[in-house]
Image (cartoon, rainbow, N blue to C red; front, top):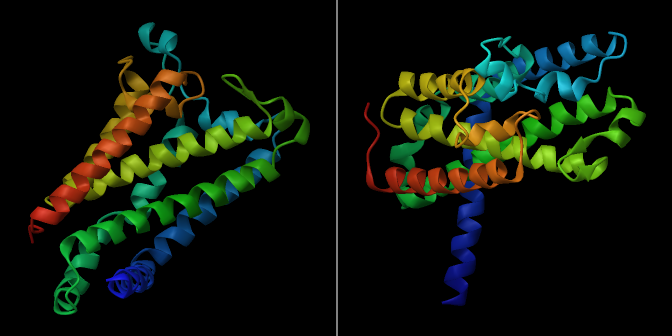
Amino acid sequence: MHYKAINSKASLVNLFWDQFLFLWQLIKSRFLFWLGLISFVILMLKLMPNSAIVPLFFMGVDFKAVKSCQVVLPVFWFVYFVVPLLIVLSSFKQLWQVRGMQLRGLRYSPLSFAAVNVGLMGLITLIYVVLTEGIMTLMTDFSWLRNFKLMQFQGILALLVLFIINFSGIFLLLIIQTTIGHFNAPLGIIIPFSLCILTIYTTWKYNPLNSLMLLRVNKNNILLLLATTLLMLIVYLITDRYSEPNY
């Protein structure tokens, strides 16, 4: 029994890295293009006088501006959070098309496949956030970083909280995209895009994406973001376990 458990875990790890190699072939060009573009933009912003890069990307729009109809599209914010969606697109659906029959032949369960997909989404999100925010941190003056505040946190702790929030937000958007894309690929791309746009122009306080803006973030909407991410994760695992992709 113990041997079977170990063998099962090893098999799942092997499946994960095997699937990652296939997924990397699907997204490699898009990943390198978009990451290179964002890195270039960050470097250009560094050349601007008195520019703090972190707020340029994550400040967002406050509720007062929305209520007074004085919203200016936060381009950097919008681009930052939709780029992972553009990198992934319908890759997980393509992955199933390429690998589904082979994996069934190897007796991997649909739940194993879904769990591996979740791990891959998490890995993509982690790499994206670490690289982009790492570059932002390196390109920002240390004195500004030291004084950066996010709620009751300051300096390195504030950056860590920002990292966790942004990771959760991007992970949530990818889960939404992949869950809906499981049934309809175009809708899977359109809906999370629309959610980002609605977040900019609405003041609904129960929108979990509010916490992705520094001007709106608070303890309650962070908890809402984490709870929504967990709920969508469960929904994804259930739909991927008990349904077939519509090809």
